[in-house]
Image (cartoon, rainbow, N blue to C red; front, top):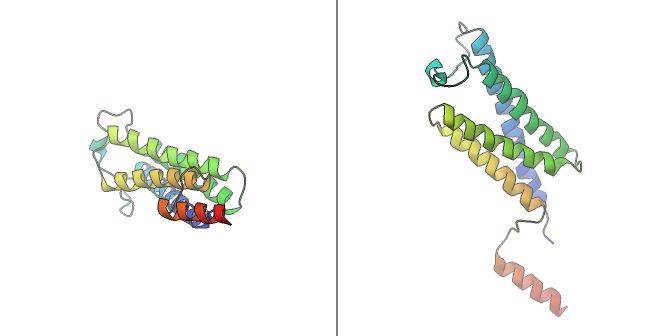
Length: 153
């Protein structure tokens, strides 16, 4: 049986990265909406919201920070503390990232950040599958050699 330690460490990094950046991005969108005169907060152009149900970036910022950032922060803490619900939370966080990006792509123009966070969500789901033993890692040749050697022992 292979160790899931590398997958766990990688999942911690991805969850931590998304949690911190989603919380920061959500805060920036919310603050930028409430105080547009602040020059230190960068928000996307208001035209991106044309045709959307939003009149400002306040609600999207709150959802980004509290929902996406919060789910990732929770998943990170659960995995860090090796809690039984950690992989469920990791899967929920990965799906949340994918849903966030799918919805975002229907509302605003494409951005490289969308590709980055789509990849992060997909990687999260893949790492959860690895940790559950549902997605084996390593080459099939090495696995078959190990199986043969254990059968001969």
